[in-house]
Image 1 (cartoon, helix red, strand yellow):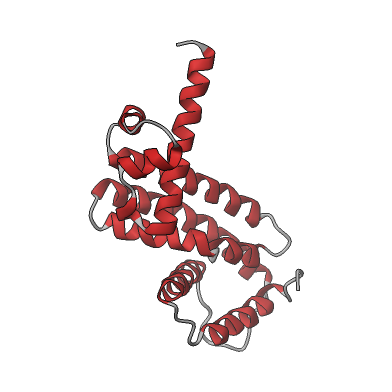
Image 2 (tube, rainbow, N blue to C red):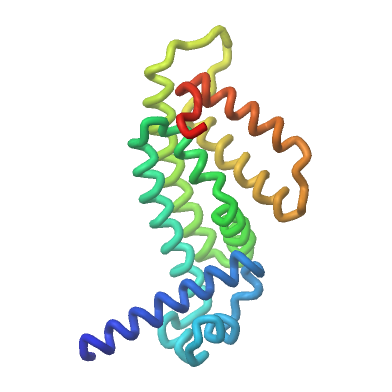
Length: 197
């Protein structure tokens, strides 16, 4: 295959992944069909199967692209001046929260997606735990008898971001301001005030 054909194939593959990502974020995973993906990418429907073979392979490509980008963002956040806040900003990003919910729903029906989601979740959590461990190690322990572990904080951060994303999809914001204020107070106690506010 010539260089221009390889570049064209790579460009088509990227366009199909982007189209599937947009459909999934905007309409949910059930809307990701070969017909809709091809139409959104403005290519022939047969190219979806040519590039991915199966819909599971397309979903895996969508997931891996987003997961690798998020892993890179988390690694950069770990080196930020205020790494815990930087992790929260990435973890709580609304579009990513919507996609995460869709992948969790999809994982309920497709084992290959469930396996991949679990693998990347473990990588994300290990990175977050390392940041929390580093930050907690530099802090003087407070008066509280109960200090959350880095693993517990990682799960709480992931859980809170999912709850907020699910509520947002339902149009619910009851208690959100209060829980975000509580989180801000905790993060301020860990690392000082948000330098961006």
